[in-house]
Length: 59
Image (cartoon, rainbow, N blue to C red):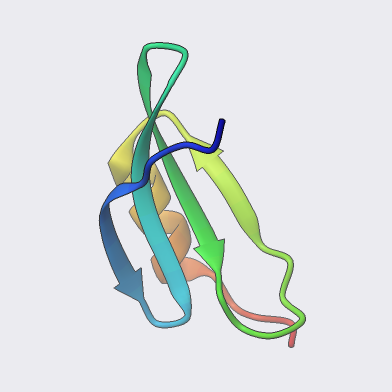
């Protein structure tokens, strides 16, 4: 089953979203630029937003 993303925000090319996984809130940062493979899960929303703001695309 795919997670249901909520509270989605965009920081440049990176989107940050929250979702529920195994009964815990998780946060995802993923770059939407073509040929950029950056994505990561975090325990806190703050960490995900920091990763989004400091991400630099290789593409």
